[in-house]
Structure formats: C-alpha cells, structure tokens
Length: 321
Image (cartoon, rainbow, N blue to C red; front, side):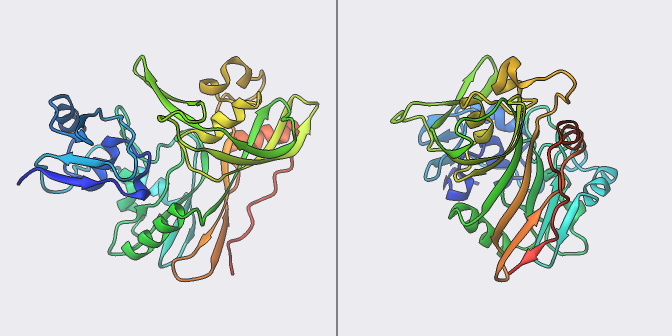
C-alpha cells in the first residue's frame, strides 16, 4: 500500500479528523490514528493535525497505508444495546429510517466514548443487506430526530439534500430569560476554540478567517413571567453547537447548558440536562416527494414543559406529499 491524497467532500464539513478516518478506514483504531498524527504521517493541506481537528470541504488529506478489514465490534457493539436502539425507531421504509435519539447518547465515537449510535447500526438492518448509514449528526446532549439511510443510493441523495440546504430543521429549546425581539434572525459567525484539552464554539468577528458563517431563525412560542421561554429554532447553517451559542449570544442560554450559559443556564427545581430537542425534519424523500417527521419530547423536557405550562402536543404522524 502507498500514501494517498484524499479530498474532504462537502458533506464532510466540520467532521472531526478521527471520525473522518473511521468513516473511510473502519479498521483503524483510535490509538493507531493518534500515533500517526503525532508522527506527522497524517497531514491536512500539508500541515500536521490532531485527531480533534475539524475538516473543511476541499482540504487535502494525506493518508498513510491503512490496515484492511472492518473495525472490531467487541466493545462498541452490544446486542442488548442494539435492541434498545431498535425501540427508538419512529419511522422506517425501504429507503430511510428515523430515530428519536435520547439525551446523552452520542451519535459517533471519540476518545472515551464506547457506546454510540454509529457502533450499533448493524442492529438496525431489519433484514436489509446494507448497514444503515448516518447522513447527519446531532449533539450527544441534544435529543430528537436522527435520520439514517438504508441504501447507498438513499445516503447519496440525503447527503446532497443536507449539503444543499434542502432540509428544514426545527428544534425546540427552553431558554432562561425572554428573547428581545421575540422572533428574528441571528446572523453571527462562530469559530471553534481549543485549549486546556477542551473544545468549544464561540461567537466570532465578521471577517475572521477562522470563523464559519452561521445563521439561525428563531421564534418565541411561549413565555413564563419573563423567566423562561420556549423557542422554535431553525438553523439555516449546520455549525457545531450553533443553536446553543446563538441562544446564549442573545442573553438567553438554553436551560441545562453550563458550557455556554455558565450559571444562568441552570434553575433550581429543573433538570440539569440540556433542554434542546430536534422536533421536526422536512426533507426530500429519496423516492420522491417531501417527508415531514416529528419526534416526541424526552422525559426531562416533558417534566419541564408540565411545570412551566408549555404546550407539549404529541408528535404528528409522518406526512409525505
């Protein structure tokens, strides 16, 4: 085997370097990858990179000779956990599948992460020849809709839809405080910051070469005594932690988000879990038409909605038109 140069595609924007390698070379272990990064065998646009480096479309990846064969499934794959994952399926046809992902379950692996959706996808074949494929991601602490493709063709069409911004995403968020104005558009760039062994996203200055364009549309659905508000948030771009950072930038951090809300994001008597839920997806179905899916709230958000008196209608049935 020889050294290869591979180009990062549009649908791989902002993916971590280690996750990019797991996608393309499942036989590579995390330890081996980190050693290749330390020794300079792996480079991005000719420069050294770490496992946590975020990639951008068009970048050239130097790939040293890779081990062949699938990644070992002993640790991430667990039949009991896979059966639990099957219970999360809220929609399935011959082309796609949708899960209502619970808060706290990572979509993909990383340092210290053993159990994640990507490692359990073999348990979601339901008799199909192909292993389902992830076509987008939501944060570990965010609950709600996660879409999977059941065939390579469906995966390509869905990836193009997400890449072309043809997917309408609506999140529900409980925030601390009342946004002013009650509805609007947040157009503020964001940038990834590293330091102290941690990564976070922050509002950046327009024109900063390290910044990414980020736009979020929001609408206030309900307010309780100016202390809490229920927002519908619709990201027009897909940056890491975009909704969390944009909510905090208005002075109304999402309840249960200490990473971006500091002490203001917590409130006595309420769950400390993040109150951000991927409620609705509307997207082009690979077989034609537009499909709309909704996901019910997780338990901790149902309790908060009940305590605050927010309306919490059940998810609507799938609609394809």
